[in-house]
Figure (tube, rainbow, N blue to C red):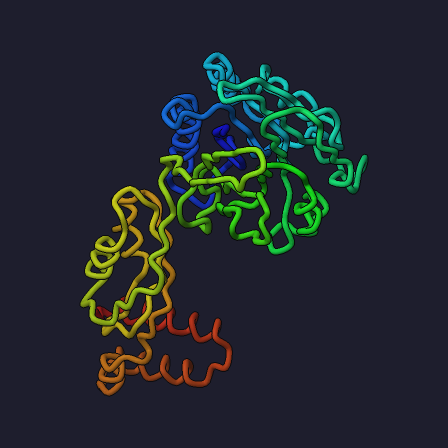
Length: 373
């Protein structure tokens, strides 16, 4: 049995614009986690490392970033753990032929547009044969058809960066499309995949397929909630692979779902409710629902949470216009009552959901400016 550390989609150097105001801190956090891979490989007792594309977020990363990756590669190789890599679509060989060679000088790199000669290594657990290619649609539109299993002994592994039919990038010109029948036809003990950012174990592919997506190393966008990291795969010749997902340790995006704030008396109570549900070292994402009895200002909630988490996303889907409190205000012979009556009338007349949301938001702002809490 050979144990692999299967990594993909680290996207080192990504901008992380969705993580403002902690985007720069996140870049450093992701790089530090990546620098820890040699220790992780030692701790998990892996025999080899496979990298399945989009190691970098673009073809021209900062040279300091390339140097950091080069050192990680050296340390893995010095520890007797060979590294195998294919480029992705963000860091394609066609965009910069020298990038992977500079970043992973001791690795087994696949630079041809088809399956050419496989790389063979003698690991502590036995011989390992690895296949891969650098996808280039202009040079080869159907690279899967070039696969031929060699007669070398031991474990055989295929590295690919591409999209299966139900993945977001399926059919995009810059991404390799991986038909299910094409994957099923690869005579390998393990097919290590990159491109799709969610961990997807072999059992999700069905029909005895031995493919696995490792998912992104860390969330590149705030929409990527849940565990992110890499896969440790135990692979044997002729047997189904056994995989487990390991967190990279980078803060995860945690989706709290719909949070009913109808019973909260003010914004600070709303923020406290979200803090009770969100893990300490996380980036919470929540959708506020319910009928609060005050004109909720979601920015106050965000500001309070940012002080603890650094970055949050809070969507306001509450219905103040439907609350008993607003109905009471509308009965008052005051300026606030007049504003409430106008706002309720316009909300009721709106057939468009976006228009209704904007009208209610304007109503809340107006009432707050009049001292209504």
